[in-house]
Amino acid sequence: MSPRVAILQFPGTWSERDFEHALSLVDAETEILWHTEVDLSGFDAAIVPGGFSYGDHVRAGAIARLSPAIAELKRFAAEGGPVLGSCNGFQILCEAGMLPGALIRNAALEYISDWVRVRVEDDGTPFTEGLKDAVLRMPIGHGEGCFVADPTALERIEQDGLVLFRYGDERGIATGDADPNGSVNNIAGLRNAAGNVVGLMPHPERCAEEILGGTDGLKMLESLVASVGDRSPLRIGSP
Image 1 (cartoon, rainbow, N blue to C red):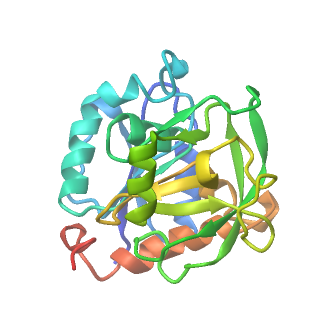
Image 2: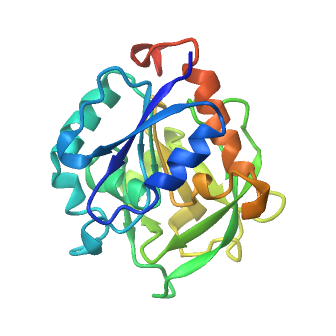
Image 3: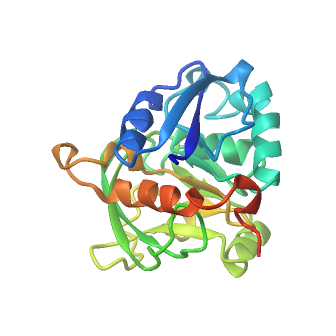
């Protein structure tokens, strides 16, 4: 049976159709849910896609976190449901407190649209099974992608192994030149302690076909389908 994946849509979201198409390539069944009408009952996973929710007023994701969708998303995640936030979705997850830290203006104070490489630090999530130490090439497109955290929070993030993706060179080595936006410790994405909530600034849905310039994003979506194919959401993240 094909997994059912909910794709949340906020005012200003623009990547929901991209995720819908990319997930169709791995035989997932999708439904786009307007943020005021989100019920994740019966879904195997949820996606918070990229875009400019509420025009990024105040700061990226700050208004979207107040949506009724967030309460339902937190309930779903608390029960073990896999949640993926990409770009603006990552910003929303951080603003909502579902992931630590925050995303601020890029160090260069410029919008960046480019391809980057990230090393997968951990394969203990539904989105990275079998991908530990893999170097994935994916596109980014953001103005507020610089990940920051206070020293105490950063120490906990590193000690608890919550860094899931780290900007790196062709070999996956984290260097200053490989960090496109000034993110502390080259952090490109995180996981929560249970491993079922994942956020990253790159766009896996925009590199799911060769015609787009690469297919590394498809590996994450294939991992999701394989992960939830024989398990219910309540079991994801369980020991």
